[in-house]
Length: 199
Image 1: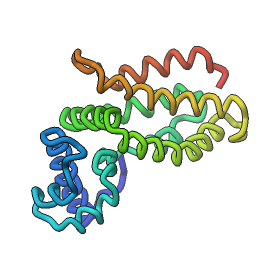
Image 2: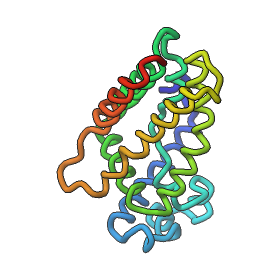
Image 3: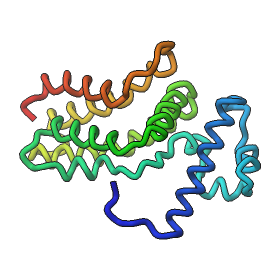
């Protein structure tokens, strides 16, 4: 979690964004993503459409925005220097999920299902991951003491991002209760770690 206490203005902004997102997700569930316009969401919240667009420039951003104030990459970088890449990432990921309330966990599962189910949102999510991959690869290289173009660094960075992406795909297809996402991810990363233990 961030160590700096947010200002009153920041707190109000986050609260408004949470209200907008909660309303959007409810309307997406009730009416469908394609059938729900930003104008409908703004009307429900009681704000102007331009205010909604100021906080969420695109419609997929309404799904992709993560209100949880947990910087996974920063916590990954802050793990003890003696920890390997996968050990440090798994610890940072578990710590992140531990900070979520039950309501935030439910919201995360809802968002995950929408990302998996809606092509427009899934494509935007892929763009976000692609832009973040370079920074993540640099962080992996720093921890491993290698260069970003090192073959093992490229392989393990891509494998971790791949696991984060693939773990979301079955969410829309399951009829059984959703497993804990932290457990699913940690299990997949543990399996990966058996093959990349040298890092």
